[in-house]
Image (cartoon, rainbow, N blue to C red; front, side, top):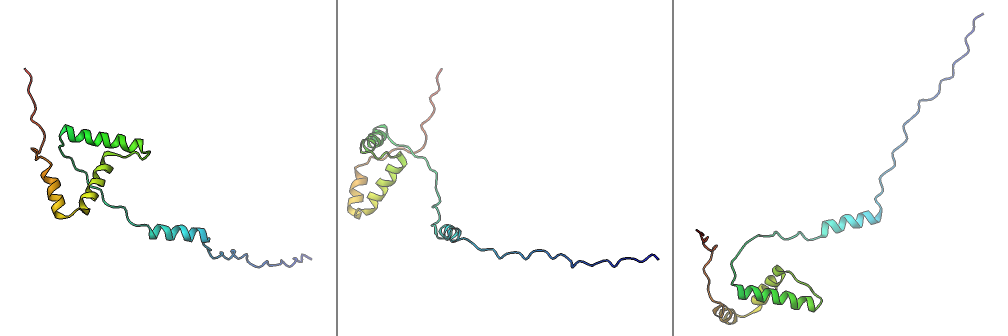
Length: 114
């Protein structure tokens, strides 16, 4: 007799249940800090003409700041000056501007050498 042995059926293998994602408290803090950070201000590039003696004042101020152990860039010094002007009264600003001679704007004409 050819009797077949009964085949045991194994239950189908189920995929493991995916664990719920648990966000570590440190990650939550980092994400919140990213959301709460203020947006960086938009920057504007500009150029201007300045007399040589006034430019030297910028150079001297940079040197003074370096001696004070607080190096500064020219743009930082100019921005600090703007903040100082903003705190002045209208009369003080007017007086300060009258002390600054007006200069011709634009680039100097090219000198043609022959």
